[in-house]
Amino acid sequence: MTTYEAIIGMEVHIELQTESKMFCSCSADAFSAAPNTNVCPVCLGLPGALPVINERAVAFTIMTGQALGCEIHAHNVFARKNYFYPDLPKGYQISQYELPLCTAGKLEISANGNRKTVGITRVHLEEDTGKLTHVEGGSLVDLNRAGVPLMEIVSEPDIRTAEEAYAYVTQLRQIVRYLGVSSGDMEKGAMRCEVNLSLKPVDSDVWGTKVEVKNLNSFRAVRNAIAYEIERQTRVLESGGQVEQVTMGWDENRGRTVVQRTKEDAHDYRYFPEPDLPPLELDPAWIAELESSLPELPAAKTERYISEWGLAAQDAAALAENRARAEYFESVVAAGTKKVSPRAVANWMVGEVFRLLNESGIEVDAIKFTPADFVRLIELVETDAINRLAAKDVLADMWQSGEKPDAIVEKRGLKQISDAGALDAIISQVIAENGDAVAQFKAGKEKILGFLVGQVMRHSRGKANPKMAEKLLREKLTE
Image (cartoon, rainbow, N blue to C red; front, top):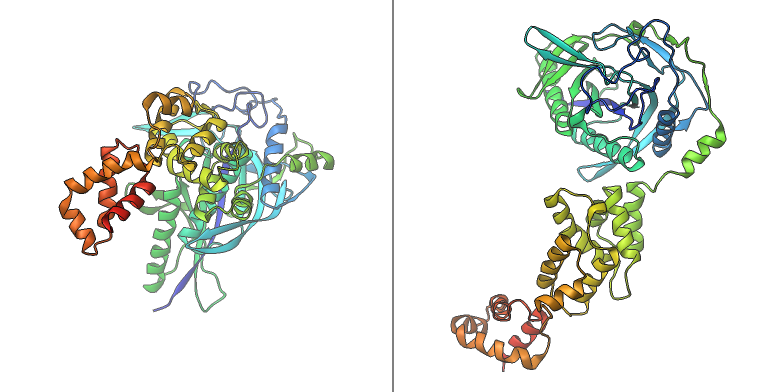
């Protein structure tokens, strides 16, 4: 039986977060308005209407190319891509072909513990199409989306597995969100993926027939569709058949790819330079200014958190995942004292603040307490003023009220009992009430000490210093 290797390239379309469309002044918000209301003669393709290039969309595309290490072309050209479909009112799409904005980039990914580089062929700019809603007896056309700025990122065929493809698209979304150029919301169609996949025997350099898979509207769909298509093509080849060059769609309900149409080649689109738009001649100083404005990207942030602050790799990656959360984390670290380390802040952020953010459905800009108040709470734990259990209660109170941590501790009487004399009576009571556990400890069952510490915490209503309680218990039980 022949063993096959997948050769995978990806085309990722990303709607840019501009206020207006790519070539007209219509709102680029395709969702909140009633169907066919954010339209004008330009995006409807009416005779005599002339396009004007959206400068912000050009800037966003350049920034993305720079983040991906691309070469930025000051001279680039828009082209007409001709095809006929009900959601394309002009009968052609204004795109870029021979002279795009960005070429020859790369993206470092990690999948299944292995790192690799995926080449980026091009990042170019075009306009989106309208949207079809299929109903019984026909289809409804909404052209609010027609003309929305659309950035296309085309990879080299460097991807080999479904997991690598998943890592690639998730990291792309993370980057465009960091840059603020797109929401990347796949559920709203702001990011859409297409896969080009073929198989070759592992001992051969000859690639098989390429199949395109469309309708991948979630990261899960990307992973599952690739895994299924690899299996499908393997079955075809193993049975002696030939893989046909077709465009497949992904049927989420049935968990399989289905044939949509035979695949067009590039020349079928009859590309030619857009006659209504002059070539773009960009100022190199403006390109350099855009590059200088780029934020620190998540991969670099992760490495810095590990090298400068000694964070665990998993915590560093979690904190760098979201730009707003990363910036909040850094503001807390900046507000810290000598008693509160970046690692302590990271532990509380990842363990407790992320949980509260996820449960409440808010983002960090809506947190009611200040970074300095957060630092103070951690400091109360680090200096043994309160224990971690009490601190979680204080944090929950701060989350709801925004009140200062010291005020909450005082109001609720949560100061930790660290005085040996005060703990002695509680420990004596716990020993008296738990004879069986005491006997087990004395017989060598070390783990039972944790149960006894828990009883001390219960009797002290959570205010005992657990480290001191364990120390005093051990001393009394070994006298």
